[in-house]
Length: 108
Image (tube, one colour):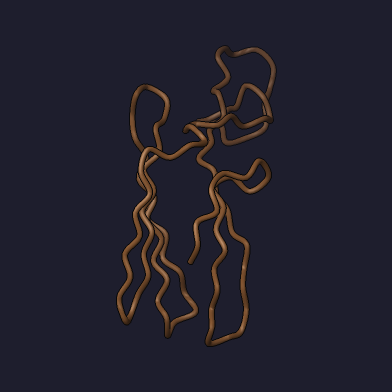
């Protein structure tokens, strides 16, 4: 698993290589939110409890991570990314790639 930094189309970008399968994958994520609709007039799409103000999501966290750390063993490779978000909060994302398993775990 190789962290490639921020990509405007993918968000936080990675190249994940599964040697057992002879394949590499480009993967990315971005933490986003929809501003809530304020008011009672008109209708918006979405669940009745939550109605977005627009159909455009907005970035919740900065593109540049505060911290990126790697750990690797004979069984698993892990990356941890800490992002600075709105309200002076942090979001921590951990991805674990098990060498003998096709599954990748993501904790946010």
